[in-house]
Structures are given as structure tokens and as C-alpha cells.
Image (cartoon, rainbow, N blue to C red; front, side, top):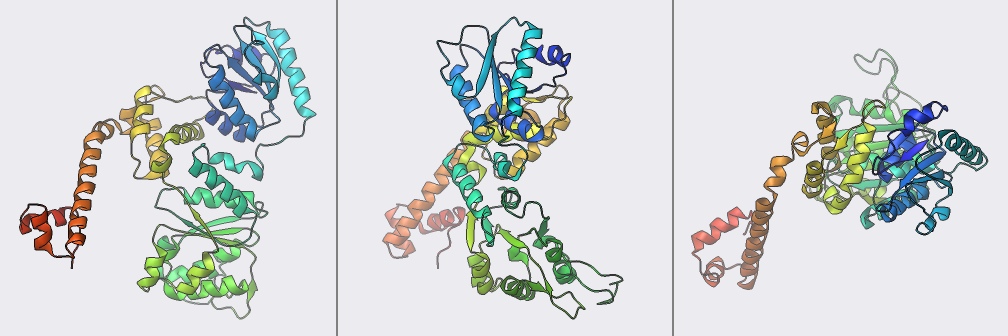
Length: 437
């Protein structure tokens, strides 16, 4: 069963109920609970409700119930609940108990709740429909992302995911596959920028035995490997132009030809694409085919950066902490770590957050993750001065650009309007990385 205990007031639960053959997994928040509900088949939950946490806990349970509505709840409290918790019945609570417990009677109630749960169709859990719980948070950008992922997953059209490195494009691609009708098929990921130059064609399309030197056996390419499932081509802008032609042909007729082969092979797979580069600029520079761009840009999904929803950073952090924990060790964030994570700018986005947490879990001696272990103590200390410097630089750039525009690119006149010398004006242009003709 799940034990939702934000104040950690039920330490005895696990040992007492173990004697009645119950296995308890504990969570202090909805984020932790959702991770556990994906990992284990849980049908019964206990929630500790105090006079001080009722409002916050109601919101946490509502988040869990939205994803797992068939979960049966039992409340535990130190005081009477009838006057305060009208939301209990709506949240699928079947009973409540005061402490101290009569453990035998409590175990009987749990057994009754379990029996009721068996008679209720399971909604939620490990099936494909619940994969969206991996993208948590109530920020409007995240809500819109979940909505689009769900809608796009119902189609078989190509999807182009955009966003800088580390945003979570790979997670979104996997989510699209897991929510789709192809979820039982293979999900193949290929980083186009990491493929060996001379073997890209063979890697994607495959080859027959003897097709070239060292081709001592037939090789099934990634496109063919993804038959019945999804192929995710990351960093598509790095694919050479000649391979872009072959990929365009495949998108049009869904057939491939292995190197050295003499018959076309029909492949049924959905293609997802991602790039952190500006593909429109790559087209202008002649590095990417315009016809391929229009063919892959049927559905467009932009993945927001962590900076855009920084208020939700702790949901992600707690999720990563649980994902990389084992059943025997429970890690926790210190107060200074929580503060540092909320105020850090996260230039490396979700990938940086995950990697800092994994490193801190290795370094800690007492299962407490501190700001120092995350490597954020000195960075956040300098944040105020860094922000001030950035704001000043942005303001200087705006003033310089306005002066140039007002004086129609006459640098001498622009400098005089700001009461600075022409040399100083050019120095500031260089500092702000402004190029003028």
C-alpha cells in the first residue's frame, strides 16, 4: 500500500503492518507518490491528516486522484475529522482512524479496502495511458505540453520537436510512442550527429552481406528495426544532404532499399524528429533541404526550458531522486538545497538537474542532498550580482541600438547624443556584441 505522510508521523506503520503481510511504500508528496504508483501495483493508500496540513494535503491527494482515481484511501488523524474534511468522501476515502491504533482492527479495514479495490476497474497504473505522469507540474506551459502530447500521440503523422539541448525532447518522444497505438512496438532512438560519417546510410537503411568491404553479414537498419513502432531521429539537422534525399523518399512511399539489395522493403513505422538548431536558418545556409523540412514539420512541438517553469523544479527533483533511489535507501533534500534549486537558472535544463542530483546521491554520506553536494552553493550566492550585470548589459544594448536607429546608423551622431566619444561608443558595441555595418 501507499503511505502518504508529509509530516512523517507514521514511522511505525511499515513494521506493524508487515506482520499482517502488508508492504508499505512511503511518500511525502504527490510527486513522490506518482512515481511509486508507476513503479508498483498499488490499490490502497493511507494518508496522515493533521490540523495544519489539511488544505495542502487535499491538493496533493487531488493530484494523485486525477491520475489514479481507483485508489482507495484511509485517513489517519490525531483529531476528529468530520467538521473539517468534507473533501474526504470525494477523494475516495473509505474510512478513517484516530491514533493510537488498534492494529488488528486497522488491518481488517485495510483488507476490506483491498477487497473493494479488487471490485473496482483499475484506472491508471503502468499502461500507456498513464505515461504523462512523467511530465509533472501545473504550470500552463507544462499543461499545454501534456495536452499536445496526448493529442499528437493519437495521430501517425511526423512530429518535429524543437528546443535547446537538455530540454527533455527525448522524454517527449518516448511519451508520444508510449501513448500511441504503437506502444507495444519498438521505440528506436538515433542521434544523427553521433553516427559515423561513412556508415550513416548503412546504419539507417541496412545492408546485405557483401555489399561493401567488411559487410560479412546482413545488417537490419534502424528504420527496419522500428517496423511496427516508432523511430526517433534526434539532431536531424546533422544528417548529410544525400541522406536527407533518401529519408524524404522513405517518408513519401514507406519503402527502403538496403545497400546491395535488389528489392524494396515496406516498413511501417512512425518517425519523430528533433533538433536544437534553427532548421529555417539551416535551409538558408544550404545545410538542410526545404522539401524535407516541410515534410517533417507536420506537427510541431516546442519543449519549454526549465527556466520557463522554474516554480515546478522541486516536482522534477523529487521525481529524479525517487527514480535513482533503491528500496533500502531514502534520500532527502535539505532546506538549502531546495532554496538553491528554486533560484538557480538551470542553463543545462532538465538534463543538468538530473545529473546534479545523481552526482549528489553518490557523494552524500547521510542520504541528505545539500546545496553544496549539488554544486549550487557558490553559484546561487553569486546569482544577484550576475543578474544585475546581465540587466545592465541588456539595458546598455537597448540604449545603443536605439541611438543607432534614431540617427540612421550615423555612429558619430549616435555617440554625441549619448555624450560619449566615438571610441567609447565602439567599445560598448563590442562589449554588447552588437555588429554594425
